Image 1: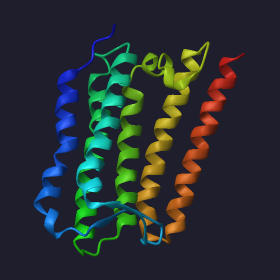
Image 2 (image 1 turned 90 degrees about the horizontal axis):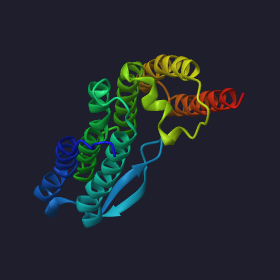
Image 3 (image 1 turned 60 degrees about the vertical axis):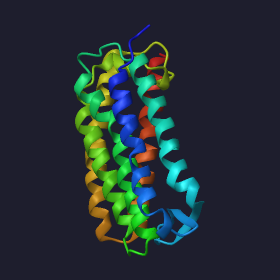
Amino acid sequence: MKSINWKQIIITSVVCLLPIVCGLLFYNQLPERIAIHWGINNQPDGYFSKPAFVFGMPIMMLALQLFCCIVSDRSDENPEANKKAVTVYKWLIPTITVVLYIVTIAIALGNHLDIRRIVVILLGILLIISGNYMPKVRSNYYMKSKVLWVKNRDEQLVNKAIKISAYVLIVFGALLILSILFQPIVSVAIVVALLLYSLYIYLHVYMKSLK
């Protein structure tokens, strides 16, 4: 059985739960219903009750973090070679949790923030970081991961796909950040294009692996 880095899991899990302290500090000032989702026009269209947001949101993110960390450690065939890159990836969810939690509380307290621009900038930065570290992860970490569901994997083919995808993530991340200067539909179009590319590259690798 592959070892699990419990030290990283504990530290990142604590960070995921830290925002609860902020929620408790402002608990009496928060409204009973807190917006947790906004449309591209910055209008809220999804709400949580105050207790569900203050306590439930960090716990949900903690559950996601635990799942991702355990799957990552169990599927990593080169833990030493991938240590730096995987560590960066493991900090993405805690970082997102803290930033969005604080922003959500600020908006709930009546501060006028452009949540679309904040989310788009955050997503763009995460894409650039992911693209930067993707080629630095040894290929069999991806190839042997059950998440890809690809049989008879061609290492050279997967390496090529990973390298191209890394550049694409960096480019799309930069485009997303620039899209805050334009209408919201531009940001949506970039995200849709990235999703379509991701589907294409996976199907390409999958079909090639069957030959």
